[in-house]
Length: 321
Image 1 (spheres, rainbow, N blue to C red):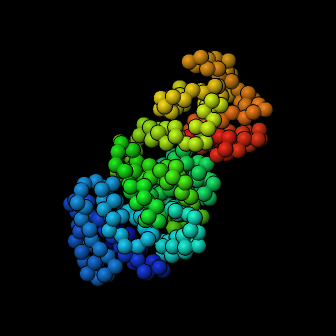
Image 2: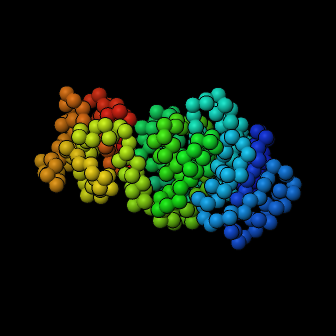
């Protein structure tokens, strides 16, 4: 897998790059492969992580990078031949964009489950800065090994953070809160390998609970929500939805209503807060809606209803994963 990855980098139409390969205490043949490749190609620099773990390795590589633009890559993925050129050209033209991803294709097809297919479908249509800012709390809007970013923007935020959360999603959220614009090229420029031992599958930092805590931490300080905290309503009054949003409520937020379509729930009260139908939202003064319904298809339907009532994504409502 590493050989295929390195071949895809060597085949790039943009050739003026340095490849920083960070060894994080590997015990396989990776170091030997990279040492051989480095002898053949002086653009390759083999670094050894002075710490331990992914975040330490990422920050070490970032500190040693000579260029102003940094592209991420994982050792088992494959770049499209024009990936680096397309991203570099875009970022040169668009100085207001701090981070640029690409659409991705999962492979091999035999290992891809329905949930991941739906996630990639959503991610690959989340392209423009406005879309990314409006949907930043649904899921991580970028495949980490697809991004290229301005080194200074990330270093100014202290680099990657280590903690009980996914380090890449935390970085996207911090960039968003710092006012940085992020975008994505509409073309598939990375083949993203699906493996049963993928970090996102086996590491507790990527669990549902970790994502929920991280989202709530950043959402609680989002200016769009803080400015209208007294007008907050939450769409989704089911048990699973309430479990996901309890982290936000733990930051002192309290909805003025819960929205649901289940007639068995409508008319009830949850901790003294009424459960009402979506029609309740057709008010002269729009409240601020957080939709915690997790199903992607349902989110599209709810967005359609909200738009029909004049609600604007990112201004009057946000979807939350």
